[in-house]
Length: 171
Image (cartoon, rainbow, N blue to C red):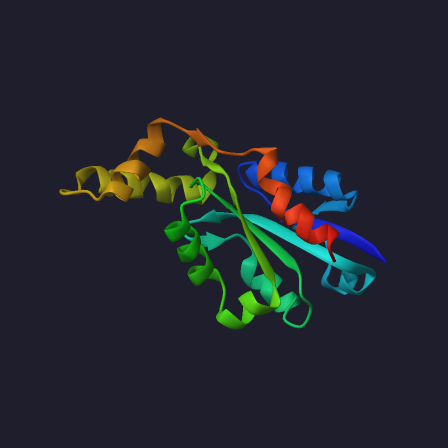
């Protein structure tokens, strides 16, 4: 049977990780919108990865519905560099305990570059930025978020895929 890496990427970080993972494992690579639920039966192992926007993984509800009975590997790619409390928030916002026990989850550090954001999300972020700038007594996290509007970060590194690839090879 075949194996596949599916991804949903808005800024390119999840695509970069998915490409590296698929290459390392010699698995098929495909954007989620080009994959149909009926194809699931054709694949033995599936990896899905996406970015995290406003605490939510892109397309995760669809993926969890599709794979409610089949275990897959899931990776989230967000703007922090392996900050455990932020990773726990991502898990809490996107998965139930039951889902986390069924699927293997990995966090891969991405980055923040608000200049790449387009459309409705860009408008929402613009409003958010203005509200945050006016806020008094900002927390350390809020200050860091505001910093991201003018100073992009990028933690994407091929080394971050090693644990996920090792796990996939063990299947």
